[in-house]
Length: 269
Figure (cartoon, rainbow, N blue to C red):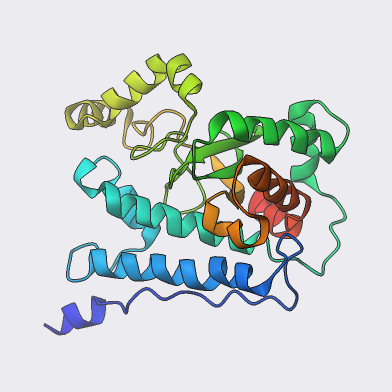
């Protein structure tokens, strides 16, 4: 009985995201508080309600996602964890920093990826990609992929590129919602088929027996999130309004006001 009490952890709580000034991306304190306080606390409460008195209760959101990612009956819990983590990453890389970045490695590598000379050109291309990829709600990530390239990637709804609980390594396909656009799914049919096979329990056991547990992981699972932008309506609607033009204006302001100190710390971690 004592061991059960000791191993029991307290409820998840919403962290205090402190900011001495309003992030430039936001026009009102009300909108910023909706993202960092109201919605974040709502997601935390949802997670507590779903894991209370279950075997998942002692686990972190990362660990929960890793454990249930191939269980379709747990899709709602998976998406709550995903949304919570995504919003946390977004808040921490949108709060401005007082430090000056002497060498912005991530930004330079993003310029190299697009083969352009300015962030304005990068932003223009990313806005086009967002409109092609996001159907309704979603997130934008800047990641370091398995090849070491710095690239943007978009997810619909609470889609993620997650999860390995040991660090920020992520799957490149959301297994409980849309990570890629419709055209991308059509182009990558074979890739999706291979992932489906790798999630089959017998197939996973076979791969692990042959290659070992590390090599038996899903191919392409070694991506790392460096930046995240919340593209859900609640993240901007009070300040920018509704519609594609409002989302575009908000997205551009996010990309122009990313906290590159935090992003480069994630890269150097």
